[in-house]
Amino acid sequence: MQKSPVKENRVVVKPKRERLLNWGHLEGDLRLIEEHGGLDSIVPEITTLKGLKRRLALWTSRLVLYLSRVMTKRQTQVNRSVLNSLGNMSHGFDRIEASLVELDKQMVNMKSDILSLEYRLDRLLEKTSGETGHSTADFLEERHHAMDALYLAFENRFRGSREEVKRRLEVYLPCMEEAAKNTESKKVVDLGCGRGEWLELLRESAFEANGVDTNRLQLEECRKRGLPAVEQEVLEHLRALPDASVAAITGFHIAEHLPFLVLIKILDETMRVLKPGGVIVLETPNPENVDVGACSFYLDPTHKNPLVPESLQFLAGQRGFINIDVIRLVQPFREKPLEPLAGTDVLTIKINALVGFLNNRFYSSQDFAVIGRKARVA
Image 1 (cartoon, rainbow, N blue to C red):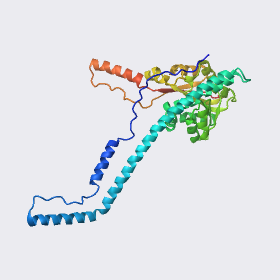
Image 2: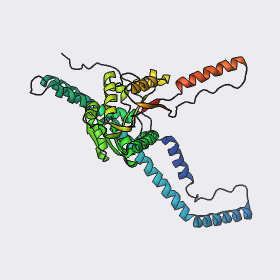
Image 3: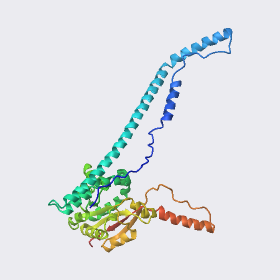
């Protein structure tokens, strides 16, 4: 029997929160404006002159000061208004920063409450699964959906913005045009459609696209944008489709989540439901890149194992697809690839060969896609 989590007494050192702005600079600027925002009203002492020269200089100074105040009266008012406005903004930002600190605290408390509710729901489902008329499978399915919010947050954090994902997926539009031309159909089914970026891109390109996923929150994101998507297991969805009924089947970053036998069955069902001349596109992380294969692939704890381009290409060919292409996709790197050395001596040539090897393994494509075709009827 699973026990309730026990709280431990631990000392947690929280990092100091960075301020929104460096108020020290702003306050110094405000003091400078306050000192020089208007003209002085006092004539400076004139100690180097005597007698008539001194009186004439004082009179001239007062005249110049008077005329200057008359000519710059409005500018002085503007300076003071700006000073007041900046002062008010400074106080306003202080209040905003305090509010953000409070919101941070509330978010931490909300996350704690959500985790507590998830734990209690999990225990409740375990307890009631044997006490009601519902099957254990029904309860297991509901427990699975308890993770929907977590995975959606994960996607938002690591997958990239909606616009960025759509930009990356544009490379596959020519494949869809090829399928439409060969099959005289624009019906596309996207397996594991997620937030619907590909569905949206297809709609913008006049395709009739439908998605399938099991994450209810991601499906809700699709429905908010008017994108057709259903909640169903991908294999179950494919089995319900008629023979030779769609032009293309796509799956972006779904293959690495599947058990091997399920992947084979999906390839078989895809072959069945595609029209002759139809296209399948499967994109997945590329373990040829050492950083992907050894690190970033495992950012997603639901990934099962990486697939090598040659092996996925081989599997597609074994299940009947022809003219199978492998495309390797390169996204911008945080660091620049290593630069080869200048020179033609033996040592430089050997070092440059090593540089080339390291660049190929660490700065090569992070994702790849296998694109297969169903043979056209002769």
